Length: 274
Image 1 (cartoon, rainbow, N blue to C red):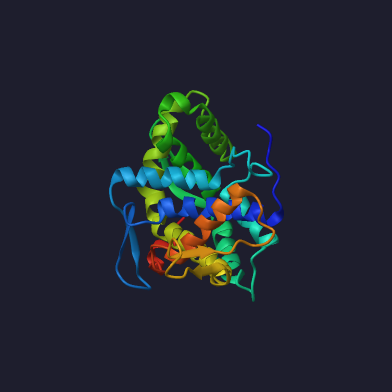
Image 2 (spheres, helix red, strand yellow):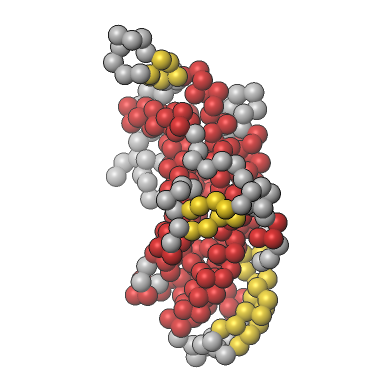
């Protein structure tokens, strides 16, 4: 498929629409619910199915897109960086909250942590396991998304992590390793982090909202009583592509409706371990 050509502003609109849609799939009351008051708020999943769904969408957030509309196969994380480097809607430093939230999340997922006394039943061993947070998020998301017949690649990733930690796995079934990892990270480690992850993603979502709020205020127009529809948007002059104009309309509507969750502060007791 031949890639469509967009100018920088049109390309950013596509990236922002993708970011908001992906974040809103995770950050809504059908999937999550907030408990308690700041600064001790906790986030709970509605059901175990929603837990898996959240991990799958979070995996998509970290994974590169096959969307041929984009100039490159960029993940949502990559999209955040692209917008940071050249924000086309920055008005009176409206990008600042977005930048701060993005840097906090990127730093967090890239940090190497040590899981102490990690036990793998298939090896009958207990040891300290060092890995990046992004690695165990990808493992949980991938296992949640696929059945064991499609997990060869993630099995290889787990084996690489263990070898990096000097753990001999030569006589161990990859499927058993998958079960061990999933049980520990899905039901223990990642569930512990879910409140903090949700807070960071919600801050990014609010960062996008505040970044585009001035653009919304300039673009939004109420129609006269004799006009069809209650409102309309004035498109930026350099946004010519019809598809991007549809994206822009959706983007402005998302600013009009605001993020679903309020800004919240996760209890510090869910931010101190691994």
